[in-house]
Amino acid sequence: SSEFTDVSEYDLPLDTKWEFPRERLVLGDRLGEGAFGLVVKGEAFGIFKDNNSVTVAVKMLKEGSTDREMMDLIREMEMMKLIGKHKNIINLLGCCTQRGPLYVVVEFAPNGNLRDYLKSHRPLGSSFACVSEYERPTVAMVPNNSGSSIAETKEQKALTPKDLISYAYQVARGMEYLASRQCIHRDLAARNVLVAEEYVLKIADFGLTRNLQQFDYYKKTTDGRLPVKWMAPEALFDRKYTSKSDVYAIMHSCWQEDPNNRPDFNRLVQELDKILTSSL
Ligand code: ACK
Image (cartoon, rainbow, N blue to C red; front, top):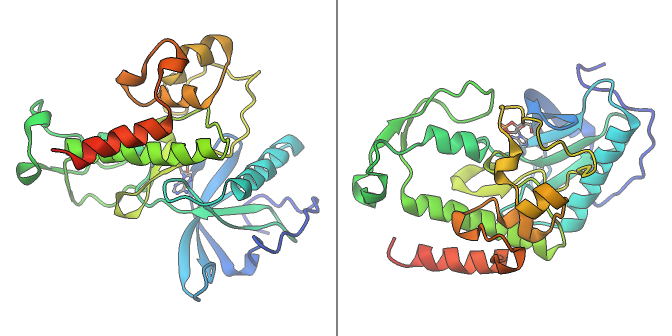
């Protein structure tokens, strides 16, 4: 009946803790396509205690998806339930599993992915490091042609070193939490970090099932980038993914050949916190 996939031949068990009545979910614009599904913007009425409507992102399958893709989406949803909530991850809000297509309702990040966000807030000139908090230039937003949801073309402040350290800190906080829940992301990159309100960064797609055997290191991502650039040598050559291989994506100082010599996320959080609270 709708333009979205009607996967109703599956009977999923009802989980009353998470089930959200689908009649209270109004689907809106398509935000983009993920590995095997669609992400659509939506309004969820009364998803929190009050009766207000909340803008959400809804993950669902594409038309003609396979049983395997269905299983992957179910697995992602269950993984999100198990991992629990943290400020710096995209949290699960609810799901519609009964009498219709599976909808996985998650927090919406209005400012798109961190990669595009950083690009559209690029500091002017090369004297970036010398610009103080008080004299930072303003740059006009570059119109976003990737279809993601960066706000209008209003004037935006260019980013300061402090902003960037704060972003690194927030990513490390999110990853520290995921690591504490035994979750290994395997594809930590700025394009998989989303920018929510108030510049809160949230790690996305941490619950995805990634088929490591079929991982194609030479396949470009949708925007034409090679993921190998962000991959730790042992992940790239030996397919050994650990929390430590996620860290490698982050900073040059973490690029130690031997994974044992790299800081873990707790350490990174501490280090970045020190930098943030010091002179910057
Ligand atoms: O990189 P993007 O602009 O941000 O394009 C992708 C697309 O949907 C497919 O994943 C966007 N997206 C995914 N989850 C969310 C979310 N929770 N809030 C906002 N945008 C999202 C993502």
